[in-house]
Length: 305
Ligand code: CP
Image (cartoon, rainbow, N blue to C red; front, side, top):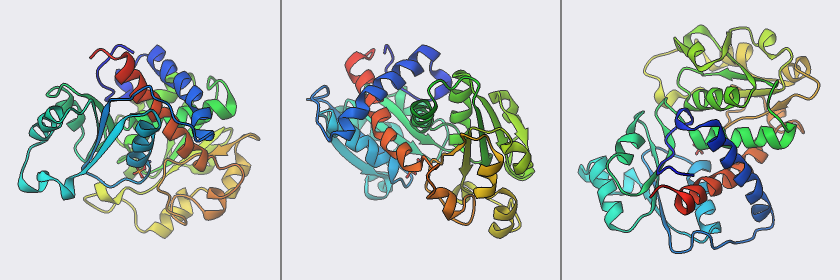
């Protein structure tokens, strides 16, 4: 892969997406066998997180270590960011410390691009504001591909808080690029203006939206990015937009449920759906390590640096 950074799905060509997914698929056996590789021996990877994370930060860390790299974890709450250090100065410091790749999560959309433009290290966007979450979208695509094979002709329904979701945007871009159709569903207040430009169809009726769906993907209410009330109550949100077993029954015969997590049981998803045998949520987590191994491997072994 001839690029220094991965900042969003919108930057990636279809052949780059395919290369990442094929490489990740090959790495699944390494994870399943709890094996180790030495492809990135001598490389240093830093995770720089200005927002909380369980899956993304730890899976990048495990991915780097599985490939033989050293890792450093930096969180905004315990770093010199608390003393007023800017993002660019933090990045330049990581360059001087010999970091080869910086995995950054930031509440401001565009922050990873600003960092990438000012450091020598490769930069991977691990989620920036409401903009993009490319590694999540790639692991979602890998999970769907491993389950269904070709994504072309599949129907993905993303339901819930679309407005504040970087996952919805990145998933819409990657699934449509790979030939699936994407419907976004939620109350009008949580559907952003202009979302159709991502190639999606909008439907505010969940029962209508899930008809014929192969993948139903509920999204949580992202209250950390809300500055006003968008729904009367969580109970009413669940009543109209919470995915339950009845929605799986209304979907295609082969329908599965995926969720980027963290999940909020009783809000966007019922517990029996999250735990049912058609839930791929834990498979997504495993594929997250494989996709992040592929991203690090392709950038640091074959990259433009
Ligand atoms: N899906 C996701 O980004 O999860 P984390 O916030 O736990 O990283």
